[in-house]
Amino acid sequence: MASTERRTQAARREGTRTALLEATIASLVELGYTRTTTTEVVRRAGLSQGALFKHFPTKGDLVAAATTRLFDDLIQDFDRAFAAAAAEEDDVAVVAIRRLWRVFCAPELLAVYRLYVEAPFDDELMAALVPVVKRHEQRVTERALALFPEIGASPEALVLFTSMLFAMQGMALARPVNPNAAKERLVLAQFETLARQLFPNKPKVGARA
Image 1 (cartoon, rainbow, N blue to C red):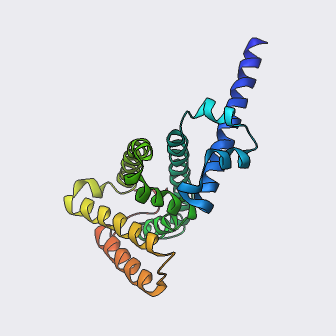
Image 2 (image 1 turned 180 degrees about the vertical axis):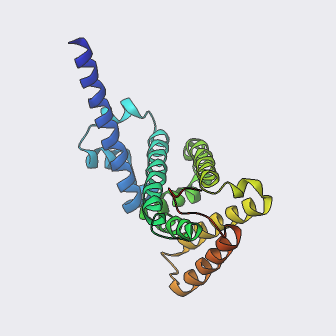
């Protein structure tokens, strides 16, 4: 009986935490960091301020946890979409470029990148965000190395991969104020060409070597 009660309490805590994080992400996407107040978050989640502060003592803790969850969800979404698309395509490296660009254009990720602009002017946000961003960058690199070990074997390939990430991030950030589909297509086409040169014989995901 006690074990069942503990599981029930744990499920309630996890449900509350999930509701708060989802409400935070939605608010960041719609309102931005400054207007994402704890009052707004609990209103969206249908919870109390007390419930929020029991899980997240500060707004910085809340935003950091929401960002971590968002990054993890996006990596999982990329893995599923990449595996499904790559199973049907020969140019697996090109599939990765295209799927990665879709991730960069996700409204949720754009909301997180706007936090990068806010962080230098908010000590609490900066302290909370830095370790989250470092962890995410490490996970992205690890994922890339798992899919394409050649990146780790060549310093030039690693630099190129990193450059692609920064370029995609910059293009995605500029999209809301300066959309330029033609320029995006040109840049992405160049990335695809480079990917084919780096990984000319990359097999399909799940294919036997």
